[in-house]
Amino acid sequence: MKKFLFTLFGIAIIVLTSCKTYQNIAIADKPAVDTVKIHPKDTLSISLVSNASTGYKWHYDDSTAFLKLIETKSEAPASKLIGASGKQIFIFKARKKGKVNLKLFYTRGTVDTSKVFEQFVVIE
Image 1 (cartoon, rainbow, N blue to C red):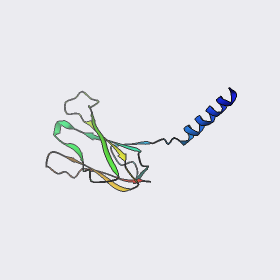
Image 2: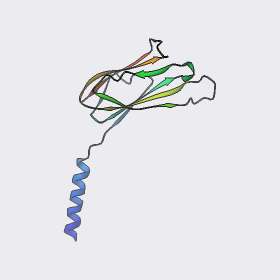
Image 3: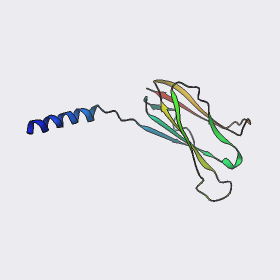
C-alpha cells in the first residue's frame, strides 16, 4: 500500500509541475508601458472609457495573425447621471509568437476621430 501511495504521489508531482499556467494582462484606459510581453495562449484584456450615449464606440481591426479577439463586453457607468461614461472591454488571446502594434479606434459610424488607443505587444 505504501509503495502504491508513493508512486501515486510521484505521478501527481510530475503532472502538477508540468502544467503551464497562462497569465492574464489587464490594461485600463491608456497603454501600460511601451511594450507588453505575453506568451502564446495568454490573454490580454483592455478596458477603455466609452460613452455609448454619444454614438461613439471603440473598434478593433482584426488584421493580425498574432492576437485573436475572443470577447468584447461593456460595463455600465458607475454613475446614474445621464450621459455618464462606461467601459468597453476587449479580451484577446495570443495566437503565436511575434510582434504587433495593437490599435483600437474610437469612432461613430463612418465618422473618423483622432482618438486612438495603441499598445505594442510582443508574444514570446
